[in-house]
Image 1 (cartoon, helix red, strand yellow):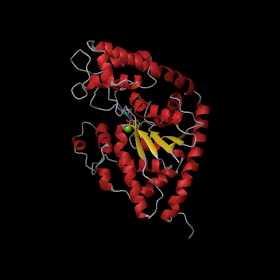
Image 2: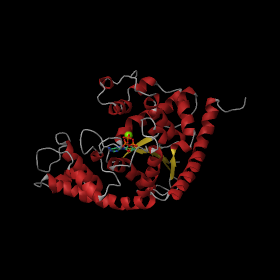
Image 3: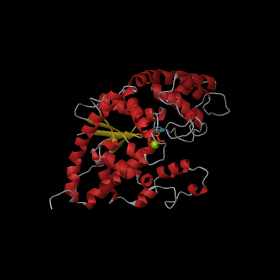
Image 4: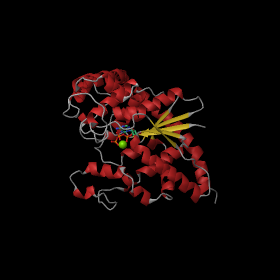
Amino acid sequence: RKVIFSGIQPTGIPHLGNYLGALKQWKHLQDTASPDTKLIYCIVDLHAITVPRERGLLTQNKREMLAALLAIGLDPTRSTIFHQSSVPAHSELQWILSCTASTGYLSRMTQWKSKLQSQSPSDTATTTTTTSHPALKHGLFSYPILQAADILLHRATHVPVGDDQRQHLEFARECVTNFNHTYAASVFAPPSTILSPARRVMSLRDPTQKMSKSDPNPASAIFITDDADTVRKKIKHAVTDSENAVGYDPEGRKGVANLLEMVGHLTGQSAEEIAGDMKGMGLGALKGRVVEVVEGELGPIRERYAEVVGREGYLREVAEVGGARARESAEETMRLVREATELGGEC
Ligand code: ATP
Ligand code: MG
């Protein structure tokens, strides 16, 4: 049976990178999947607490993320949508997987290094990012094991993510091998990665960095709830280069390439085609085109978001129903895991 699973951290309002790299694909899979395909989309709050935040913010972020997922068109009667912490088996399986996961492999992964660096950019010790760094918490380091547990708990066959998560999916497959080998079992099968064409949308302030919810500068990202005027201002100030003519050069002109790719992902054309169509035009014209297509896509989403975010009772109900369904899905797997590991059996 095909099982599609993916997650997003409640660390802020989703941006165009989340939307094009993951969420749009989630909705597309929902709308095109055969009726017996299981679709599970998780708001990963346990992952969100791997980085510090202000008190009270997580509750708000979780509610806003749920509203955002409904606003992009996820249907809670078709897709299971839930908060990760409402299914304790995510943490339980994380522990079990961690007992066969390699710290050497984890220490080579890039996400904890970049998150650590962004937490304390002026700290020279972080530039070496060793695992003995005093600010490195174990949760941030073992994040990929929890992510592997998320995926394997629902025995996902396909995981739609952005390019930055490719390494973690590779690690999840390693966890499958380690577990099955250690317990001489075939409880898990390796999940496949689904990459959307928009693999990595870049920051509007620094086109060498990916657009991120956790970037402290809100001008670096277009959020799906930004109004038309905010989108226009952010695009107008997007960092490009001094050559004032449209041209597609993904290595030499990263800022311009990012804008052309955005248009391409929203119109279904290639970035080269758009550059061809706009030959001889200036960057002002390109930016105008970006504003137009972004508004066309995000305008209706923004309206649905405004309508749903205030419906607290409804949001709570969606989360409860999703949580109950996800617990059922998890329990099927945990029965097999407990049997294989001799945990929870008769004594
Ligand atoms: P944070 O900064 O808190 O890590 P994030 O913006 O990286 O937030 P996540 O919740 O970590 O978002 O990731 C959710 C999904 O969005 C993942 O599938 C990830 O690969 C995808 N994604 C995140 N940023 C981008 C981007 N700039 N381009 C394409 N996909 C992205
Ligand atoms: Mg991220």
